[in-house]
Length: 507
Image (cartoon, rainbow, N blue to C red; front, side):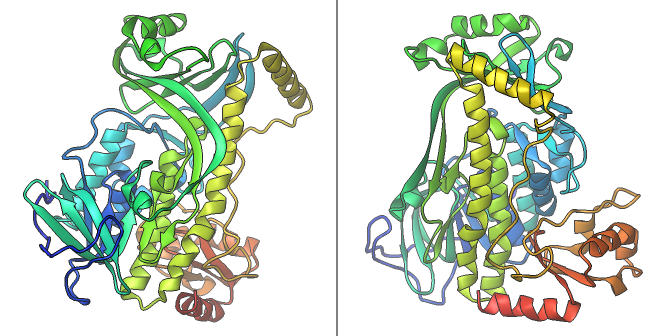
């Protein structure tokens, strides 16, 4: 499989505890440029993006295999675009499923709110909503990483501690063979909600005030004709419930655990059967797993501490109602990958990485706010409160004020953008040619400067009409697109290029 298990380490003396002093190796003696702790989707995506830019990377994952059961259920169009660069999008799409509608219904089945068009192509160049099977996503990502960096993934490696100095980080691991250490220029903790990396850095969480326990029931589907074709939130105060598609051959229900109920009692086979009875799916599905999760909303107060950065669930957790948990980790990876690459081999000032949290946090807070809004709408257990909610939504519908899609996430307002330039910080849409080829495959992984004069030339000629329309709408001669597909700025081509180089050197 190309997944390394016990090599690439130096055994060194260790003089410090977790995150404390100590060291190892000469100052210029690095095993890799970037060490990633955590081999889940965020960590492996980041590794693949870095490897595609020629950055040497090691991914240390404490488990020996992919967690075999479903977890995340959804990747949006922007996340799919990131997987496109990571080399895994086509494989993920092969097992994903799509539906046009995401409905919020009350206890009587009346539609309170509906987001339509989820199966249309979004600005990222992929369907707006893609219902996935996470183990399949992880397998596709690992296969892509194995092609780009055959020895990068080290399975069964559990971090024991790390120490920083002015040049890099030395981390110590217990491995299947022995204890060893890795020296890297940068360390990224993509090691989940309980993140040992975050804890070692003594970084606290900001609690955003949402915490609800839910039972998750994942099923294998034998008769899809008997299951709902839309993604559903049942806003029933007697039992708030979620029902959504998953990857091919699977479906998911989530049931809110009510006050006085225990996780153990509600998880029994008899209880699960009782909860599924109103859905009339007996004989159509088989339970694959049940699990109790506490849905939380939290953001780490600090995402960078010298040469250590946090990504994915290590940096933030969101309730699942907006389907943005996995997507947020992928956005972290896309933001970090090009900045780490520029810092390692592009000559950019390391301060460029200080733009990571200021750029990502407002977007992340917007996704969490939307998830909390949806969650509070769903999680109402007061019958009076539900009646009031339904009435307000009914009035909004009559007045034509209900949204038909989730609100757009905010553009970048600060960071590595050309402040004051047209479109700076906005998300640049991915055009698709008549033959189905996507723009990013032409642009490659680096920044792209697209001017009007280049539109008649190959390979941009296939996308000329869409690109010209975008430039016209912003009254610009050119646009400089960052590697993560956010707009640095639009305007004069020469000035954009000069300002880009200035921004990298003086971030």
